[in-house]
Image (cartoon, rainbow, N blue to C red):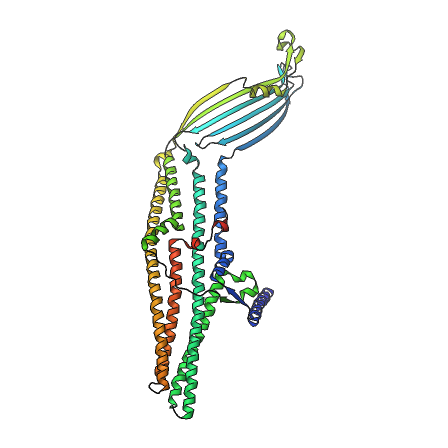
Length: 522
């Protein structure tokens, strides 16, 4: 326990030391928004987990498809028996019999739900019993069996049900991964632009602090020469202290937003130096106007939303399960047909006067196992059997629980799809409105910032000629700072609104030219 604690403490110290060294060296990492998105796709732990789901679904599909692969079965059995002879007619002392049995079978399921079975059974028997006419004896039988359900489990849909569901599940997992990828990209965009905003807000507050310091220095010089009352210094010092507190708050916000961005792109997995490096954003937010109507956005969403497509595929699975459950209520009526061709060969024993009871062997006519094969495969002896089998399990008559459950599951999925469509309707409407509103906010705050700059310039000119006081100058400085922050915030919000609209429509990957197949394969 003590050694483990020491090891943990040592590891923490190493990490902190590496972080301090990186900070001391001033290690920086300049990243654009596209760089952050690419790093998130490569290293984000959430995506790394979810990318395995399509692979598991692909394995399940391959397993389901194995139902149509032929099944081969081979068997061999050797039996050697000895028993006492109860009659001299049977054998002199004991009866010895050696029997070899072998079998080869191939079973193939067909798309209609039936199956073919081709079987070759063979044997060889050698005994010392008396009065044998063929010894050793070889036998082979070639058999072809065909079984086809006519009611329950009949048809292409029933036979391929597991394959269809597995294929749909594969597509569903891909669509779900696509949705996860879109959400991750949006999270990166949100974290990146908030980080940019906090950095720029820190700059704005730094400029505001510098203005307050400049005014404080100016007031001190004016007090020294006797042109200003000492009380004016207090108001300027108070404003400097307030703006210094704002700087501390902004610095904390910058570090917090940077940590959030680092977590999304998972810099810790890319080396200690990068984990503790400071990220320098390359991109700055822009506000190019995008014209899009609600109807256009809705049509694109219906065609591109991955979550809707996943639910539609799940709805197909539910419909197929309902058809299967309904089919299972039918009686089990099967058509069975068999064809077999036997073949027999061996050493034929010739007796005196062609009478085995005489016990006098006058010769043999040799035979081999290949002769039995030739007779079986040459279809020398033809045998055919056709029949119908009807089975009515009581469970299908008295219990309809599976059918009722499948029907409820289908209705539940239909309602889920409608709910998704309704939520999508509201989401797109809100996103389109946000894009339009945020763009107008950018224009309004731009004008407000320009007016605040002009007001501050006018107030400073009035102060020079003694037509105003420090209070009004500081007030106009605050207004300019607030206008700059609000303009920046509106530009960031507009960029996030565009990203949110792309996510709501489902075209995030298309707009960034990202292919899901490059991440999870075909």
